[in-house]
Amino acid sequence: MISVRRAAAALTAAAAVLSTAATGTASAAPSPSASAAALPPGLYGTGDPTYDGVWRQSLAFLAQRATGYQPADSAVDWLLGQQCADGSFASYRPDPAKPCDGTTLRDSNATAVAVQALGAVRREAADPAKIDAAVKGGLGWLRGVQNKDGGWSYTPGGPSDANSTSIVVSAVAASNTKPGSFTSAEGRTPYDALLALALPCTDEEGPGAFAYQPDKDGKLAANADATAAAVLAGLGKGITAVKAGPAQAPTCTDLDEPTVERAALNGASYLAKALVKNGHLSTPPMPGAADTAEQPDFGNTADAVVALAAAGTSRLAEPSLQWLEQNAEPWARKTGPAAYAQLILAARAMEADPRDFGKKTDLVERLNATGPAPKTPDTSAASTDDEEEESFLGFDVWWIIGIGMVAGVGIGFLVSGRKK
Image 1 (cartoon, helix red, strand yellow):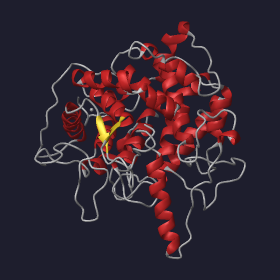
Image 2 (cartoon, rainbow, N blue to C red):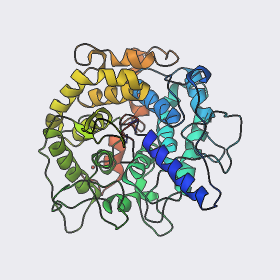
Image 3 (cartoon, one colour):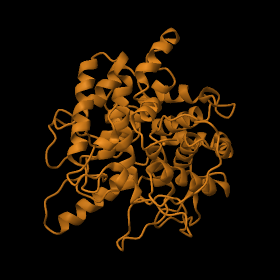
């Protein structure tokens, strides 16, 4: 799923690296920071890209294609240049000319979202064949690092988590490949991994939610970020999903034989209830912060809006979209391209106008201004674009036809992170 949700995950991975190093085992280290003055041409945003360069670039591409724009060739070339020879992507490689090696912190999330973004811009790209090779390489690497339980971790070798598994499911499905065909050596699918992270409707604190990962005792705790991601994956949709119909009330139902679609709808029920209190999701304060009050979580609220719209419960997401329209612009201005992209995709999911967000902000213009100017949309070609891009911008038609088990089925802000 999709959101900036990157820094906390990268920092967690870095902490694991430091812990491993302390025990005397060689491991990868995060890339050094890059100053804004040293940012390469073609990259969106002016903030330090160490933890989110590929992620924010990819989200910018997806939001631009969703609104009819084609990213500049220089921007596409930058993203292509970030890929390692084995098909993987790191969060950011400051020196793409240097081959990836054992110290490169490869990242399933960056790889999955880059695969989707490159596929989405393929038709109008300068070298479609090069993009085809990049997408094929990325999917091949993801298949190679799949865990035994069928899921994925943020970095290879860790336990599966709902966010990483969900974004990979989106990438696989968007490439017209059945996610169920991505089986581990033990024959487990990504859906097996997601179902293992779904809380039952009888859970007192998080009925129907998904956990990010089990805790050290194997217990599951509700996580709204993980739930929004898993709802989209379980419904066969991604971060570019749009409003689904017919409208339905979210309910939570435990089946004797759980299905990923039912688990996704249960997750939508949890999100709807979580948004009722304030109209938005919240995040706890950072450790050591002077202000100990919870803070609004703009990015994950946008994710939840997309998830509810995709689940056919857009009516219950309307207050949250309105809250974003009234409050999220300062956050997006500070955060940069990924935040603008999230808000664009939330507005699009709800059939609102991202060019008149809250009747005051042109999100598309703001996003386009954060990087090299994209190519002007060709409205006359819109009808021919839709069919070809279906697989990379929603892929609902393929999903309904291709998977019988589904009969009805990124970026909070840097401080919210993918890992809670």
